[in-house]
Length: 199
Image (tube, rainbow, N blue to C red; front, side, top):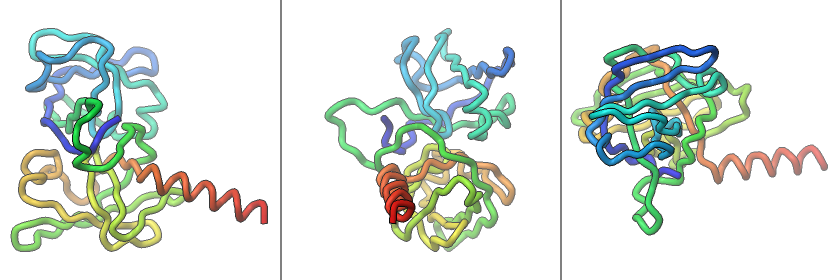
């Protein structure tokens, strides 16, 4: 379980394909605190640490993860948002983020707004996900509040700290991002769909 508050920006140092899997090696400031079998969110995707060496560690993404996320588009040298799993008893500063990406979205607009930034994203409605005004969403693992919620688009506003300390500063029109929709909203949507079907 995660909160969507990014701890660090990691750097991709190696990518190795093995059958349908991708082994991803990351250099991070908190590698020294990691152990094999721990969970870390990478651009919002929960992956298990399989090796630790010096200031680098390795995780493995399986084919389903690569199909549903932007991890298959990574290149060596890319910066990636990192968050270790929550400790029981910590404050929940963001919202409940599972690290299970629902689908990807595409950045369609970046607007600087005199000290902050507004990013707009579009997503495929075929996955039956939705946003609501002032609801929560996780973008590349960052917990954010939705504004301008429409049928298949929404925007988020980014403060300078988030812009500088996550990979949002590298986003441009066409950037593919990982989206995890609010878990409460997903349950309600599924229940309502079942109610309509049974009516």
